[in-house]
Image (cartoon, rainbow, N blue to C red; front, side, top):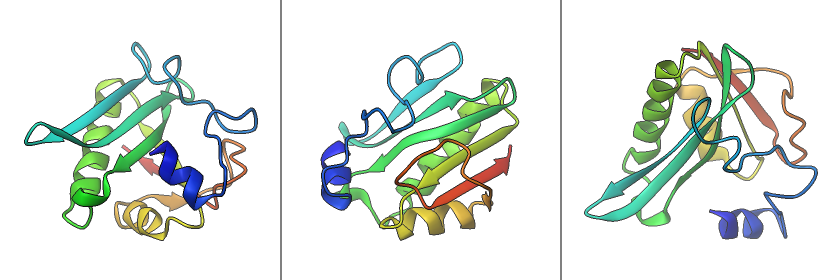
Length: 133
């Protein structure tokens, strides 16, 4: 995922000082989570949940390997992350995506995410969405 983001957004460092934080401190219990989906023993997708406040989380680092794209894996992953967010007690999910990821934006909008203002100061993202869980 990191390599693909660096290629899409020339030299982007997801851990850079201007990027929203989404590492182990943010994506681990008790307020966060990171899941990996497997198909025939091969990791095909991943994504995390980050706490923003008591009611609101952010879905981060959603990724599907190229070989698994176009088969609904991303939608299944998004639904799984939303379900885990509900289990953690969140009632609202937010997310973002960049201008070179039109497929991701389409997925989020078709899943019910509505446009909101930039909530996380992500300098790369152009779509910011929110959905009531």
